[in-house]
Amino acid sequence: MIKLLTLNLWGGQAFDPLMSFVQEQAGTVDVFCFQEMFDTPTTRITATNEVTQADGVRVNLLSEIKRRLPRYDAYYAPQQAGYIFRRAAGFSVTSGTAFFVKKSLTVEKYPGPDSALQALVDSQPLPDGTLKQPANLQIVQCHAETTPFTIFNLHGLIWPAIAKSDTKERLEQAKIVRTQMKRCNGKRILCGDFNLNPDTDSFKIMSAGLRDLVKEYGITFTRSSFFNPEWSQFADYVLVSKEVEVVNFGVLKPYPEISDHLPLLLECR
Image 1 (tube, rainbow, N blue to C red):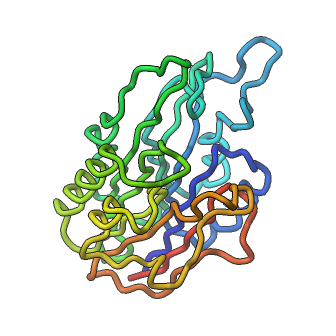
Image 2 (image 1 turned 180 degrees about the vertical axis):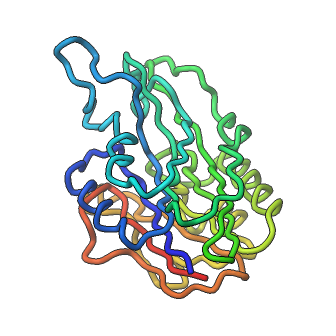
Image 3 (image 1 turned 135 degrees about the horizontal axis):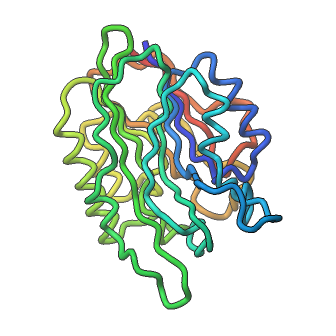
């Protein structure tokens, strides 16, 4: 049996309730799959100005969560450096995805992020100084008791952010993710913030032959009250291969106000 939670952290902008939530879940969750994790090697911008928060983001979020999850091994995969979302930070900072795997699980392989996925968008700043954020796909292979699982943690291409529709880059992203999943056998779980509507061709490519648990369990939105209700309410998904026996799945209720996304919780064997 394995218990997995996926959540876009929103850069820790709802920091205090988020930290309380993480600590509450630590007793039972085996694997956390996080998106929009931030990390910085420095503690200050200047002698008097703390950098723990910049533009509402906790840029030392990785170390904060590590402190609260001492019984987990952290696997962090930066996908962007020097920027807080689209804006230049002016100090050393990275953002990306992260696995936190309970130390009682055996990690067989951690190949790191997919470089082809990160290269889908131009890394050069736009004329207004902002940057298109790259995608990220993390993969970890681990054993829960004697059962091997391969878990894919995806933070899909963000722009265009509101529409969540097909683009040339998103279609290519879907093909890359699909190829990576086909390289692995046995029980596979693809989860995260896909930044896609469920009716897109991109989503159909990624979900082909897999169980779409958001659809199967009748979940009608994965965004919290922090998110604009007039925009697409789908972004987060969990897809599993036919070998995975789903015991329970859903959005945690009451809906926690910890991010502009809602956490999805999967129990399976």
